[in-house]
Image (cartoon, rainbow, N blue to C red; front, side, top):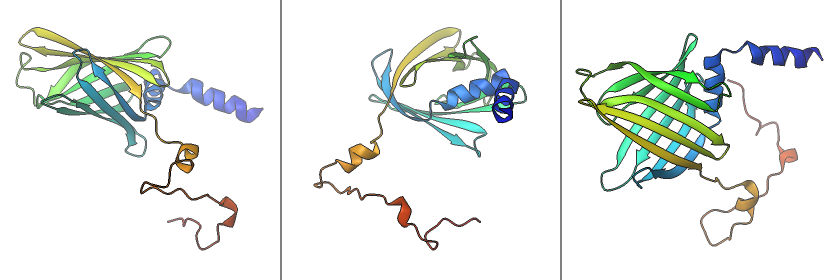
Amino acid sequence: MLLLQFNATAAWAKSSAERSLDQLKTLIGSWSGKSSDGKPVHLSFRNTGAGSALLSEFVVGGPKSEEMISVFHLDGDSLLVTHYCSAGNQPRMKATASPDGKTISFDFFDATNLVDSDSGHMRSVVIALLDAHHHTETWTFIHHGKVTKQVFDLWRRASPSRSTVERAPAQGLLMALPLNRTSRTKESSPRKL
């Protein structure tokens, strides 16, 4: 009973920024979809920095493929994203979460390598977590006062489950072997470093 109360208290004690980062970490994995102008999009999320940051790698397809990286991380009681933009600058945006935590909005507050405020740069991103396998991202870019919004509709890509791999035909290079967890010997156990 005490353990349950402690865990509930620890979860409650998290700041809004920590809860928002935890929500974003539910996106870890690979995603595919389309942009609002019909281009194919591939996106992946993974932990980095011993879990202190979430790395997003974004590829928007088409004739001229664009690659961008964003890093979501805490800064005190704030959640920030640093976006490494194909425009060559690095805007930083600060998060505000909706009351239910399913929509996280990031708004521009500064940037590196930005010549002036008229130079093209990302102004905001809104991430809407629709369910465990579907989310949208709305990115707003501004250049010489002209605002462009791009909406990305993204679906989680299925990774092969263990049962799928075990049922895979033997004609490919992948061959699944049954795992026998009880046959592990002392020599094959992982070592602590």
